Amino acid sequence: MTAPGGAEQGSTGTADARHLFRGRTAVITGASSGIGAGFARHAAALGMRLVPTDVAADRLAALAEELAAGGAEVEPVPADVTDPAAVEAVAVRADERFGGADMLVNNAGIMAMGYSWEIPAETWDAALRINVGGTANGLRAFVPRMLDRGTRAWIVDVSSVGGLLPAPLMAPYSATKFAVLALTESLKYELDMRGAPIQVSVVTPGSVKSDIFRAASGAAGAAPEAERFGALLHERAENSGLTAEEHARRVFDQVAEGRYWVVPQPEQLDPGLQPRTDMILERAEPRLPFEI
Image 1 (cartoon, rainbow, N blue to C red):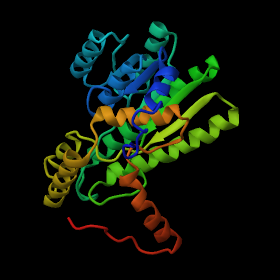
Image 2 (image 1 turned 180 degrees about the vertical axis):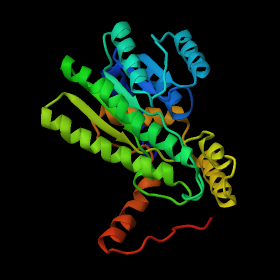
Image 3 (image 1 turned 30 degrees about the horizontal axis):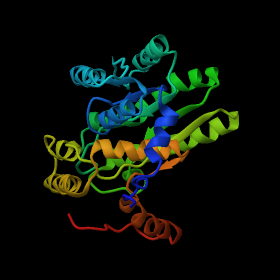
Image 4 (image 1 turned 30 degrees about the vertical axis):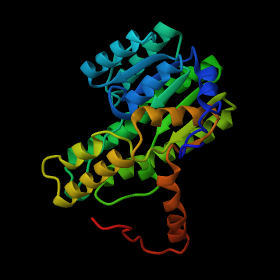
């Protein structure tokens, strides 16, 4: 039996990931909650050594304590991904503790909701600095080290279904996740040019159970439409979304298969791709596909 977007149940999917990644070191940004915590827990279950990082030091410490209690080797490093020096310090710590990172998961990100012209400048700036700048800072700190080591490595950048299918009332998120998609594809070309043994993957999460939609739409000054849309997305995630741990399992299985496009929930992405492609090829105006 096959789970949507996942490996066949009872197949070798997760076993292959365990064989490939056991004993490897993963650096995971935005690791203290949500999708990032799911990545960290699943990586630990695969037998990976972990360098989780997050700006929320208390939550990060609690996660590290949980993982260590389960037998994982963990070196938590509180850091703000918008600060290049802080991300460089994470890389130095990974070098010192584990001899370097075999995998970088650029996951840190935030969401803001509202009409694009009403979202405050500081909120736009934060989305750009974290979602795009944080990814670029991760690449700057870790790719040169991976190239110098010359051994097999993995870069996993987290975009979104919203990085391919933009939505209203989520402009900072859609814009920055489109940027992550472009950045990752550029990186793939560049590493191929160098003949580097570094696999590049981009992840397009759909609905995952968390409070991200509720928190984003409930920000002070958010338009009523944003509140309704956020509530709708939160309800969808709660009713049909993946848990963070199941999302992580699907992601690691697909990365282990060598995929560039890591699509944990194709049922949420694929139906929109052809209509969007047709719209572009026909030079048609975008049309809102649903009511809010």
